[in-house]
Length: 239
Image (cartoon, rainbow, N blue to C red; front, side, top):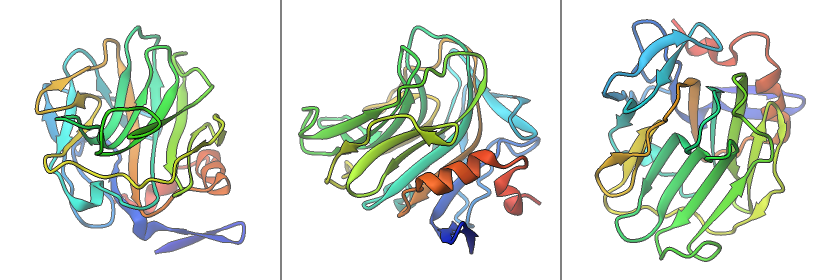
């Protein structure tokens, strides 16, 4: 399936996982049929979301998913979501397909302890920033108790962060595809480096409509289109 946006085509086939966190289906993958069901870590709760309901995380709440090739893009990728964050003194994890058993390996999307979104891509070759992994950080604070649409992308040349429909970072050059460790951890709302869930949100964090795109870096036009909808863009996936 594809959708035309201002003369370009948004390929929905690259939407490999999509979590709408709706009533009765907080763990359901409503993407393209692979069925990457989430497993609750502790007790994420259902609360009011950007569209319908969302999932709220605090203290030791998170989700895990079974590792799968869909979560391990080796080309362009994007992670997009709506978040509602209150001021926090620690980082707040959004999504990872990642390991740090020895090296930095995989991809990592988070909000820093000072409230800015960042995307990280790692090539499983060591632990040196700029050599073994690279990070792009946004410049718009998200710790303001408001809904924000955040997107992290890698287009095979640059990493970028978008907030509320526009680029919120100076794109960071990075020509290396992500590489994953033999044991890879897929998590929502917490970090897992080597088998132990950690770095949970210390304040209530709400996530809605989390989407993972494998093989697709959303363009500025596409991000603005998704942000500007007055309805849920992904509603065609909803029953």
